[in-house]
Image 1 (cartoon, rainbow, N blue to C red):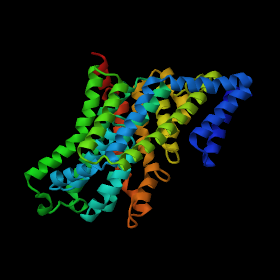
Image 2 (cartoon, rainbow, N blue to C red; image 1 turned 180 degrees about the vertical axis):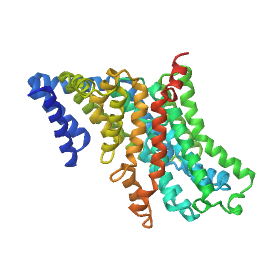
Image 3 (cartoon, rainbow, N blue to C red; image 1 turned 135 degrees about the vertical axis):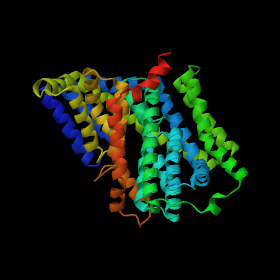
Image 4 (cartoon, one colour; image 1 turned 90 degrees about the horizontal axis):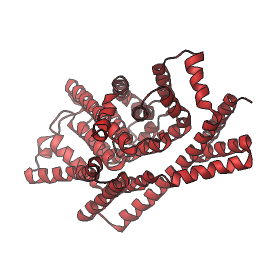
Length: 441
């Protein structure tokens, strides 16, 4: 059997296992180890899994993963996000569509605190959605806003997805995070511009709040502004020392986790329940990601041994005659198709052993490609019929919001994200300027 057929058999077997409901790391790791045993015998198969485990345990930046997850859970479980939304409620309620714009701002801050889109979706659906519906906002507008805003969590640092990509692609986490800053803020600004223009044309979509709800006095306004600045203070307390070179990435993540803990204590929100829930969730998610990375490393090692990357490159460039940019576009389209039934982590682990070396062989920057991958995942999250965020929203939304409403709500935001993806593809410096500026000094 040719190596190309072996690679195809591995992929098809893995996809069948995923469709039967097996856990991602179990399906990928099982296929990798069984393939290694069949190809290279007992010694090769055992050594493959062992070498992947050792490589994972020796990767020092992986310590950032539990630190940032813990920081995010402390801030969300202590309900600091409630204060953030009250700030946007008071300061932006006087604009047409102001609360929807404020919700995008809330999602950006939540992303800077957590790094997971699921956390943004949960906070948006439980805090922002009821308030927006109660004040007469269009239900399709607000569900689209929350889904689009929550997707920023995997792009704005400290993105957990970019940490996983860094591990698999062997790229610096700090450069990937900095590469995600400008595209993430650009996309948030594009969402805000769309909401402002749409609500200006059709004011009934986002009515202005009554003056009595916004007129709370300057002392309360300033207090809420201080509450809104707290996540930014925490974010800059860990990022500035890292960017300046005073601390390593792991040390900065520890600073962020400690700052979040101290903030919750000072606001008298740190109860035993909050602490226990945060620790349990941090442990569960960190272990899940570690198993997934372990499986991905084993799967990638088999592909390296088979030489599948060179075979695929030869197929696209020599036999099909495709240009590098056409191959890149096909890769992004495949991510969108897979995103209809897989989450971002599963997509990355399944195709990274094939795509990442191929991208490097085609001469593209792997840091830049990490941003492209992440934006494409954001689009895939919201693409019908089985987009990940669509079903999360349906599970959290009230009964009056139907699945048809949710599907309709994301169309304009997906188009905005597609424009953002095209801009980053056409102008790589949108992603690469900041890491080059910081690391080039």
